[in-house]
Length: 158
Image (cartoon, rainbow, N blue to C red; front, side, top):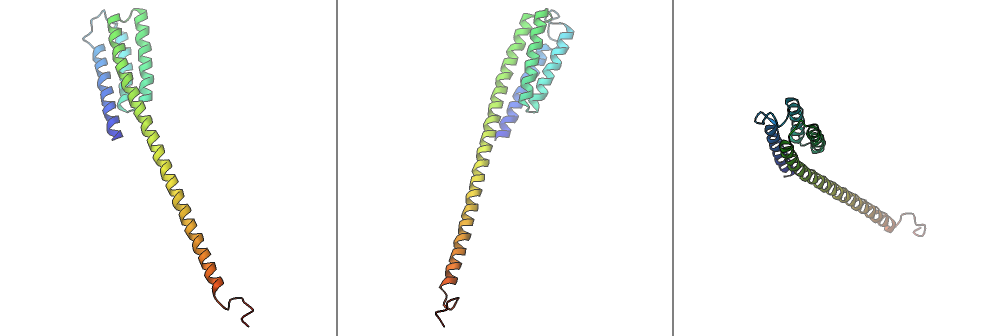
């Protein structure tokens, strides 16, 4: 169930990042950004997409931060139009939201796995303690049986 959700999240992130790639693609007007800026941003989008597709959300977040910084820098230098910058930042915000959700789901799954592992460990310890208690009770019963038999070590019987 968790893997299916992770796969869906990775697919959604990949689709969103592909949309950003198209946003940066050939349909843009020449005034929107330079070819060099477009190539740089597209490479960064690909890095985000690859990380998201691999469900490596921590790496995807780092790549998003890098992409956002590059878009901000391009805007500041005049290499990216405000309209294109706003569209890219809006898409990145959506992807970040999806990544935050995916990271929270991973953390919850890890927490649940740790809880189940602890329950298993405690159950195993309880079973081992019960076995030890049963063994000790059996030994004690044997000792009592041996102590109750006549003629064993008693000098009064002579």
